[in-house]
Length: 135
Image (cartoon, rainbow, N blue to C red):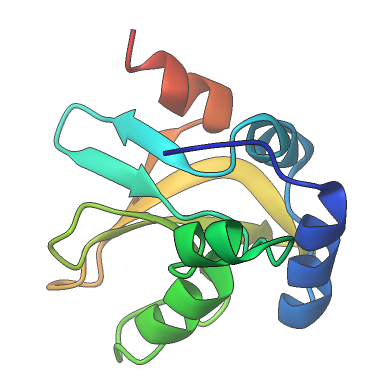
């Protein structure tokens, strides 16, 4: 179940990961922290930002972006600069990657990462397009 989040938790995540999330992604998550997305190939559960405002939200966001990114980075073929934002429940991830010229600022583009092959391919120009694919 997705729900709004205070921007301060997004800022905390940015500081912890030493990156800046793209504006459209932050806007979507502020309104609805987490949720689902569907691509041509799979169904995805979006990871939330960790919300520490109360016990219920802590419980609902325990599979947050930082935790899941750190877990994905244990795979030898996961891109070191990748940030995991969603899972299909089978090990594959949707990820954000930084701009080539700025390693601390994530691009709006959303990529599929295969846990088996390490393949990375673009699936959406931004979170709005990804969510729009659900329509």
